[in-house]
Length: 288
Image (cartoon, rainbow, N blue to C red; front, side):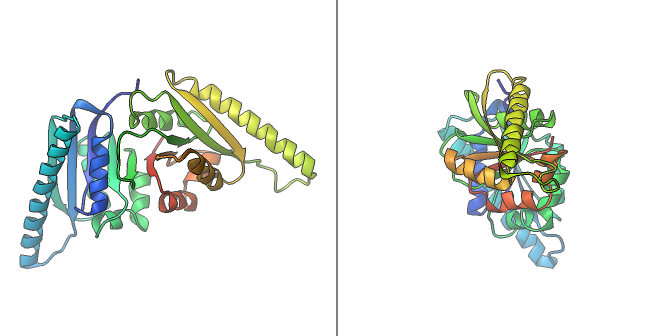
C-alpha cells in the first residue's frame, strides 16, 4: 500500500482553474493529519497604494478560499488537521518551489487555467523551471474531480527510474487501486540507418516490443500489490500516449520529467511541452 500524502501545496490565483486544483487536492489520498497549503503569488513591483490594496484583496480572497476548503473537507469526510494559506510577492515559479521545499510537499497540485498566476506558471519558460527544477511531483489538474483517480495511465520505460515514477504515481491514486495500465514507446535505434526489408522491419519492431514488455513487466513486479498491464509499441511516444489515453479514457497521465535513453528523448524538450499543452486529462510529472 502506497504511503498517504502528508503535505500538498496548492498555488492559487482564485480562478476557476485554481478551484479545480483545490478540489482535486481534497480527493487525493490524504493522511489523517495532512497539511494543505494554499499559496498566492502577487507580482513584484506593484507601486504605492496599489500594492497595499492588492495585498489586502489577496488576503481576503485567500481567507474566503480557506473557508471554502474547510467546508468541502467536512462535506467529503476529509479531515486534514491543517489548512494554511499565504500571500507572497515575486516570481511565481521561484516562490512555488521555495514553499514546496519549506512544507516538504508530497505533491504540488495546480490548475491549468487562470487569470495570471497559474497561466504565467504553466506557459513559456516558467513551466520548464518548475517541472525540471523542483524535486517535488507536480500535478496539473484540469478536470473537475468527482472522486479519486480510477483510470490512470503511466508512461514508463524499463529502467530503474521507472520505479520512482511509478511509486509516486501510486501515491496519488486511491489506496484500493489494484490495476494500472502502463504505456511505453520503444524505438529501434538503428532503424533509420540500416537498409532492411519491410518484413524484417516488422519483425524487428515486434521483437523490440516483446523485449520491452518483458523487461518492463519484470521491473514492475518489484512493486507488489498492484498489477501493471504493459502496452509496448514501437513508434512515437506522443502517438502511443494519445491512443492509449483515449482507449482507456484516462483521468490521469503519470510521466517522468527526466531520464536516460528513450525516456529522456520522450520527456525532455518539445515532447514534454506537447504533452502538457495537449493532454485533456490531469497530468502528474515526477522527477526520478
